[in-house]
Length: 291
Image (cartoon, rainbow, N blue to C red; front, side):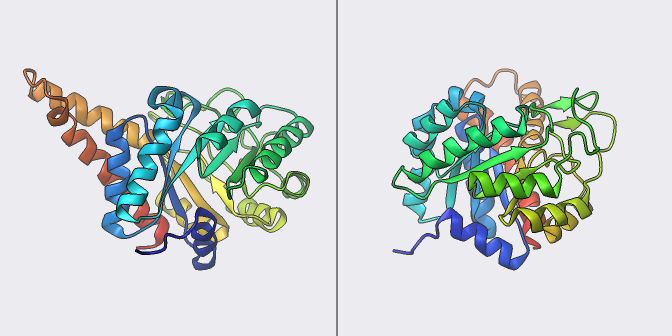
C-alpha cells in the first residue's frame, strides 16, 4: 500500500517546486468524478472544495465520505476543503465532520474581528486531534461564483480593499493560520463581456514575503494564463476554480438535453457534462503544475 502524503506535505512540495495545487468545487457526484479523473490522468494531487451552499446541498458528512472513499480505494492524494465559511460554528461543523482543511471567510469584517474569529477557528482545529489546515482571508473579492455583468459591488482594486503586506504579516502572526488568501486583483465569478482585471503580481510577492505562509488565490476563473503563471512564480501555492466548471457543466448539459429531449436516464444525461468539466480541470491542472 502506498503512503499518501498529507495535504500540508502536498502544499509544501508545491511551494518548493514553484507550482500550485488545484482546488475545484463540486455540487454533485459528477463534479467529484470529473476532478478525480482529471487529477489521476495527470498524476497530480488535488483538492475538492465545497462552499456552505454546496455543503448544504451535498451533505457535510456525505461529502467527506465521498472524497475519503476515493482516497482510500485508489490510495490517491485527493483532499476535501470547507470553502468560504462565514461563521465559526460552521467551521467547527466541518472540522468535526472530517474535512482536511477549512476556510473562515471574515473578509467583510473589520480586521480586528476577522483576526479574533480566525484565531478561534485555528484553536479549534489544533485541538481536533487531526492536522486540519486553516485558511483565512483579508480583502474583499466578492462572494458569487457565477457569470457577472459587472465587477461586484464593494470590490475595488486599490489599497482600500486590496491586501497590504502589513495586514498579512499581522494577520498571520496573531491568528496562526496555515494558509492566507489575499485580495490581489482577483475576484469571484467571471465577467460576461469583459476581460478579468489583472492580478497585482508585485503585491503577491510582497504579501507572500510578509505573511510567511503559503498563499491561496481565490476567484481564479477567467484569469489569463499569463497572470496565473506569474502569480504562481510570485508566491501563490493553491488556486481555486469554480465558475469555469459550472459554466462547462451547464453549457454541456443544455446542449445534450436539446439534442436528446427524450433521454431520461440521469447517468446518460450526465456523461457529457462530466467530461466537459474534466477537460476544464485537466487544462487548469496542467497550467498550475507547469506541464
